[in-house]
Image 1 (cartoon, rainbow, N blue to C red):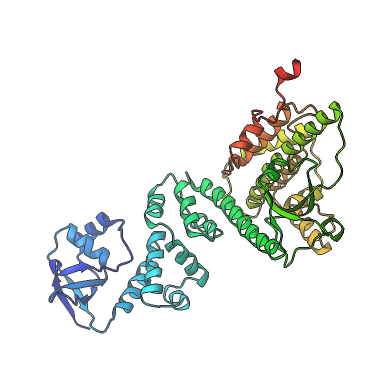
Image 2 (image 1 turned 90 degrees about the horizontal axis):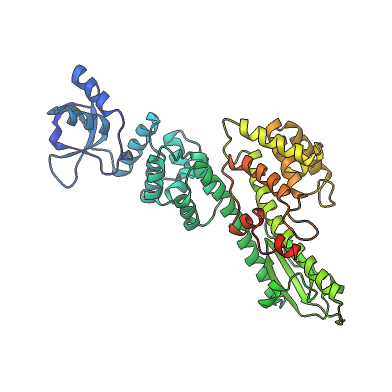
Length: 454
């Protein structure tokens, strides 16, 4: 092809160029000033204005040339290149430079995929990226681009592709954008994404359970059932954890459920089928009434703490499986874990680590022998840091934040807060304000010291 000199004023940055920002222009401009333009630009004619051209290859060189006031540059004019080929050529050239920003890559691939109908397989062949990577970039393109650019350009945020992939666990795009917008830094984004994905999954499973219940004529429980849940007014017929898979049909104990009006409700991540208690009432003594209240409150404290423990467990497993970004300096974490184990007289058995990995008792009937052995093998292969985190987490399971009088146990809370401090290094935060009040001894469920002394 013939090389011709074209005036700089007749050359334009291609409107569909994938690169929106150029780095190192000053250095390139100095090189061109000293040595001249060593490479030709590849251009196509502007279809709307005669004598004007769009640069397909060399937009960065064009920008540098304009900076130092060069009047003309050597170009090759290509007339056989349609718009689709122009875009894929620019994408391939820029991908080879390896310094495209993640939102620029995503925008370019989205353009190829949607505007020109280029398949994921073809984009993969053109760019040399795997199909998985291309799909990741297409998911990035679905995010709020203004918010994404803000986070990418914020050096203190330190956004990585791993962080963006953690958002893919969230199905709803609006929720992804909400997490991206509200996150304060990379670790915070990862923690929020894990929590949002869990909440989304539970809400999805709740809808599926409700559909199963309605199919069997089971109605939503009246509002007062939530407050009366731990009283003797309701019997629990069945329950399922909402983070687990939903069964194809509800299996209910015939003896408990037959000829009874059934209701459903959700409580602390668990879906229940309940029925009104049918036993005859008897007059309780004053002591029985007080003891009943005490036990009800005790159960409520334990249920709230169990919710904290389960949220913490999901985060711990994300640290171990690598979903949460590792911490470079673990000095404070190691010290905190050691203090937690000492104060709890921690049992260092392999089964405890395996139980933390599985999220349930390794010797439960539901655990297959192969699953148990795999958990034991994984427990042995973990780093000592991850083993300590798993052991400390299991110690939190048996921690009591209140004594038998329902008074706040500051010593237990201090141990929990020490372990929390270790997880905080990875970006963990308490699930909600109620959890904070429970850990800090400010929850209304606790019996206050002044009342006890009276």
